[in-house]
Image (tube, rainbow, N blue to C red; front, side, top):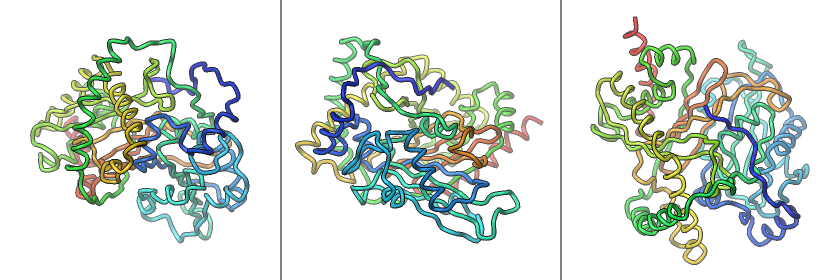
Length: 426
């Protein structure tokens, strides 16, 4: 796993707050990068949830959220009346927090996962909410007294933020592009030309091929990291490749899910080699991969590993830089032709079958996450897209699915596939 340091690159700050206030008075999302704008407009959301030995009341929860916002000032951006970087007033903290009592934790966390679209209803509230459920009668036999969930717009939070906050560390982004590392003009021209050719096709496809309605669902799994490590070592592949392969093989269901031949996917990674063409907010980088299908599970795992080798041996910046160029063009067009950017447009997933995201390890340290218990669950929601987020902890790893409902029954098959590979080793 590459570094997910909070370090950013030098920039002339000037009077940042005054500049920010002047901009956001006219447009609350004025400070958003093009990638942030797209995720906001698409109403993408992310979540973090875990059980805790702590019992919360309103006072304690508000104090926790205030501490979280101090460590992640991006949470103060993007809504009407925002004061970027400034503490939230008490009435706002109370409005974005809630506590509910439950008899038991059966069915959680899946039971309370949703698309988080309520974040976009009240334009005068921050783009995140914090909910807690507390068990009546105190902790259960596992010591779990409560469960906390942070749900945020994806425009202001990403997986590396979640990992840093879990460690009670600052996750302020600063300027994430490196203006000292220039992408050549030849490449920039080629990205612009490719975007010019691709953008109208993307626009037409989004309006014609995107479904009018999509039923989405959520599911989670937990695996012991030692099990995955043991199987990956036997097969001579990365643990990441093994996990990707198990998910893709199970959901494809012998070719009935997507295709008997090839699975088109996107996976994400963190890269410390930043350039001037990178997004100024997000650390993550997207890569495109086409995985050849095999009905033999072991062979498919090795094919996935080999595909990742091939993808990362090439220019890993190409897809993200092209995407950045496209998003800039879409944002510009949306100012003049906003009717083109309907909910249906944002439901278009580019005909990719699956998006796979491995976030940095989540390990609890410090006051902010005192009392949290593994496993830790984090995921994201994009309307119409099949997503799986992998969250490594100290001993366990969680798989967090947000996807079209027809694929949900196949999640249960993943455990059996891992057991099959374990049996073959004996």
